[in-house]
Length: 439
Image (cartoon, rainbow, N blue to C red; front, side):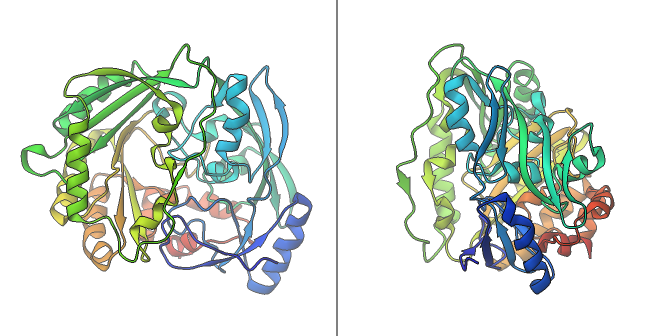
């Protein structure tokens, strides 16, 4: 067994995971059983792109599945692809783009695994059009400790399928999945960029542009105060009708070492946000972009999480229902700006009404805000409790894949179907997140 140490992407909470690598599906059951016999439980671990503790085993002993990276079948006439759970989205795109296909839904990084995308039911800039990643999973193979291998789909083992989509890896080990891709004529994106001055302007733009474009998202200046509060940059786009089917080249930049101190602080945040705001045009502009910077702006720098220093960071992502979205978002931005903390990449987006097949899927009709914060004592003791109170009062919820601090009462209120998942949870599998929010 490997002695490699793994961490979540945020490196918080600081519980290193001992990796037990599986290179073949035939090894999974034996390795899982050995870990359960010795440590009581385990958990599948992909490429470590979950931010908090949902990817950390309660035993700190994980099945490392990144080596399960084989493509099993592809029907390029229909865009149907079958691959093992350890295949990453960028590996899928390298095969699919030259053949005129793209992921139907993609999150903000292409380095998540197929299994991780399903377990967290990830979403992207086109949720209002295509829903979550789970909406495009046709079927999957799930290895359970008591029942063995189970084939699941919306029509076969439907309850187990619903528990697994967004089920945080707790219903069994995903061995492989069959997904539906979407056709493209080009890997270029025709973009519309418009700067806005207030949060009300964001909601006006969203109401207009979400109906016209598949991909919509906004950057918001979380450090702005007073009359500038709520300002940001709106970005909308669609795949271009021409421009070639080119796969992006690998990123050349990398952060070589973990900074001894976080490079994100009040001063650097204000300077960056002012620069980012001013670099965008004050009036609506049309541009063309490669898919890489449009979908995956941070993937251009490997190991960017190291800039937050040895304490790591937490991402705070919440969803506020439509009825309370604007006042609650303003209250959140005011609290963040007053704290002097925040994120240089703060993402604001409205989610649509396309229902996910997963019981614990995060998106719902409403507005979602995501920000990164350097880990500190004040963050945990002061700012997050304030933000949580605003979200709670507005009837919102937090994203388990990004969370490292949600209290159990808030989780159980926000995700009432958690007991259905618990009923389907594989007794051999457990995470620090699930222990934290359900006991």
